[in-house]
Image 1 (cartoon, rainbow, N blue to C red):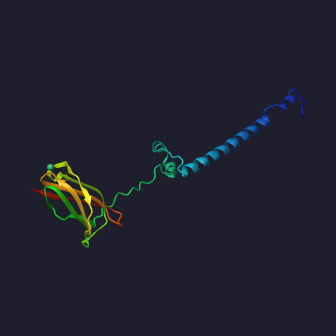
Image 2 (cartoon, rainbow, N blue to C red):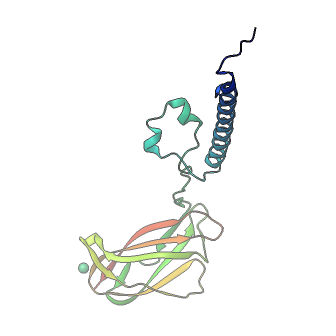
Image 3 (cartoon, protein in one colour):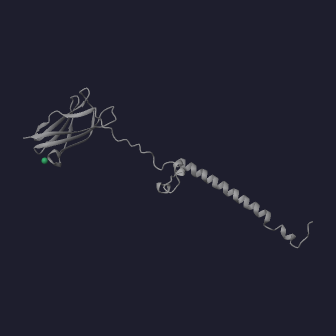
Length: 187
Ligand SMILES: [Cu+2]
């Protein structure tokens, strides 16, 4: 049976039972902590609070990366639609050199209807048709009441061909009308 040994008194203080119990508690606590952290990390990842860099992703197995949310939002940048249904045309393509008024008409091609209230947001007049693309002339918009007509005051300082580049927004249309027209400065 139970033999009394001189060591019996020490048994109670031996690490045996107590230590394994403590180890179990520590283990389960750390498991719970790991689980909580993993859940938090997963939540943060899904909320895009942080993301896995692409460099790191390259070293991860495919089934992991497939599950991960993409680091960058999908590129949905729309390039401006070229409004081919509308176009500018020169009222006069031959203009006397010097101070001049350049007039263009904006039309809806299918109907030939003039289009008013377009917003011309970019304009340029240069001599690129004469191999002088850096030679430019100012374009100053002037108001007109004529339907679909847009006018610009300019100074054609040199005889020859000038290129008029226009970009405009048409009311109610999402695209952009872009045209390059060539006019000639006459003596
Ligand atoms: Cu020139």
